[in-house]
Length: 120
Image 1: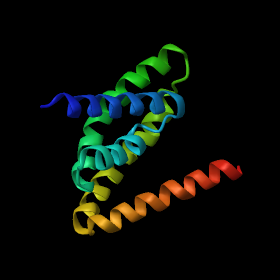
Image 2 (image 1 turned 120 degrees about the vertical axis):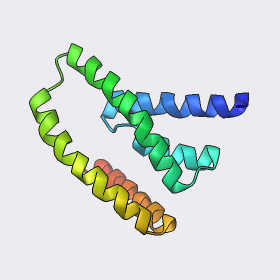
Image 3 (image 1 turned 135 degrees about the horizontal axis):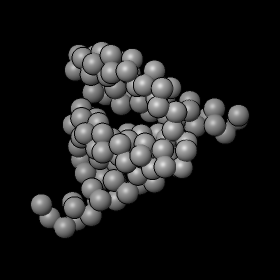
Image 4 (image 1 turned 45 degrees about the vertical axis):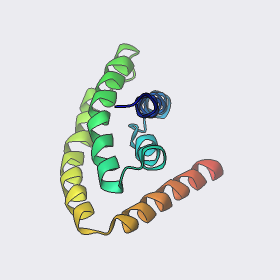
């Protein structure tokens, strides 16, 4: 692996960790676009790679927020366990939908979210 690629991957991870700690976004909102734009990943590969990284990011972030007393374990489980079903369904759907359609849907979600944050 060349140094440029290593540096870009490290920057993706650093940005994802920073956003995860600040906003609780899990990193995927940062990792997926950066893997696509900076490293030329396809949408599906970026999503899969991001999910793998998020396991580590979310674990460390949960422990850190727990140390600060910001973690409600029961609520996290009530959100997280049904999310597992959503991940399985979402992954199956992603494999059946054109990658361009997934990219457009993701972009729309980000724009709507940004608009809501700016207005609200």
